Amino acid sequence: MTLKVVLKQWYLNTMIKIPVICIDIEASGLGPGSYPIEIAWKCGLTGDSDSFLINPETGYNWTDWDLEAEDLHHIAIQELLAEGVSVKEACKRLNTRLQGKTLISDAVDFDYFWIRRLYESARMNPSFEVRGIDKVLEGGQLIQYRLVANAQVRNHRAMDDVNDLLTCLAACDIS
Image (cartoon, rainbow, N blue to C red; front, side):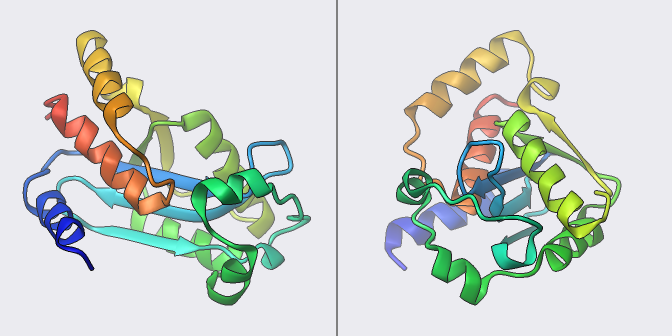
């Protein structure tokens, strides 16, 4: 781990204390046949978090794979097959830790679609809800959020993106 990574983790764990739980999902692509391949969430107040890969062989009819998406998130299908959890395990992990909570996403339409795909494949229901950043930010805060977010260089790995989202929200002084 580089010093930059260590310092960023320290900053995120000690300096950002905001009352939101953020979620991010990486997917096989952006089309209607796409599916979630990595999910991460983190609570801005407690630092509680989870991140995991999902094995697409355990999803129903999960065959759509976009090489351009892979170039963006750098997650190979072989990595998912070797290290990913099943769709049922993914749903159980999320439901156990997030029951009754509201999670914030900066791409709610996509993330909601992929959560729905995940839970339909597992034949389960989510015990939490996902909302967009517009549910926690107002007018000027949304403008400030967009300025900070546009200045970020995203890695397009789920936990990195969650941490970036928390950093943006903290810059907007929500409490």
